[in-house]
Length: 261
Image 1 (cartoon, one colour):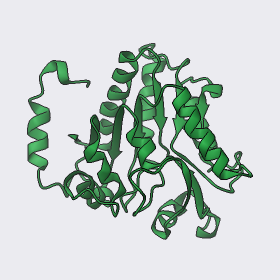
Image 2 (tube, rainbow, N blue to C red):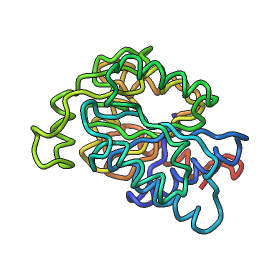
Image 3 (spheres, rainbow, N blue to C red):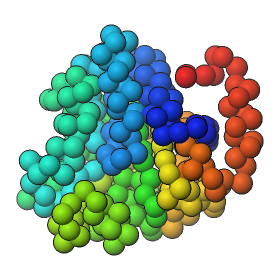
Image 4 (tube, rainbow, N blue to C red):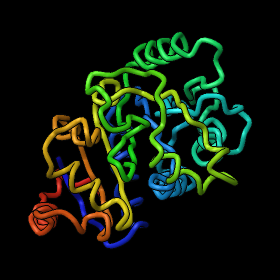
């Protein structure tokens, strides 16, 4: 893993956005993997600034969201279809027809999951998958003990996850109990993965992901086996890393050709 420690959350977003922009520039038909939640918002803000400045054009780029709640109307303000439209599609001037979200309202969710896998494959696979991380180590909605070979499927949300997401709803009762999520196997198929984390609340999960054993108890730890995994953290999220000084030394001494920010 490439671990980059930044002084604050805004710098996390700037560095991560530069990584996304580099991958888009390097690929003829880039495909973005989109995450929701608070962690990637700074990435999208910095990407939007690049679009506004004419430095980046994402109008012909395909994109696939990681997950969606099951049973929540697509037009609900906290459905991920709505969140992606609001925080990604519109500010990044993307074509709404090219931005895909799992169909959590489908009558046959298994068929919807299989169709989503096919759509990703037909688009050429994900170039760079943006990831946040849950306090229990989940990526996407792959809760602890998820199979490392799993594909897009329905999952039951852990109570810890529902409690963490309650801040987006009026009450815990309104937080859905199920979701459709890309599997860990699906995420690992991306050509690059980019995980961002901010705040002390994520420090334990980050440490387990980067330096702990590869274990289904911490689903994100499978990223240790990814060929091109980049982890961008603020100081607080990096506070639990034993080799923190080493990561800072490595990044400070990278040659120019290896840098993207």
